[in-house]
Amino acid sequence: MPKRELKTAPKRRRVTFSFEAPKAKNVTLMGDFNHWDAKTHPMKRDNKGRWNKIVMLFPGRYEYRFLVDGKWQNDPHNEQACQNCYGSNNNYVIIDLK
Image (tube, rainbow, N blue to C red):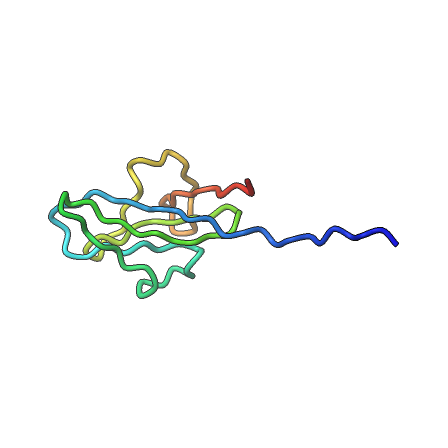
């Protein structure tokens, strides 16, 4: 009897999100990968004023924004954007299968 190849589920990928805001008090990464929950991915500031968060994501397309001291901000380093239902834009990232 021939051996069957088992299909393995796609693995999650490590994705680093960054936002420069040296004077900000709080920055939170929010997106459809965390159900836009402000408590899920608070970011940490490094000594250069850059806020970072590493997230493990499965392959797919994800929309996100940053909440900076209570105000929505887009990622200035990501030109990929789409309109959201509130009349503004979200950024998006595509995680490949690799």
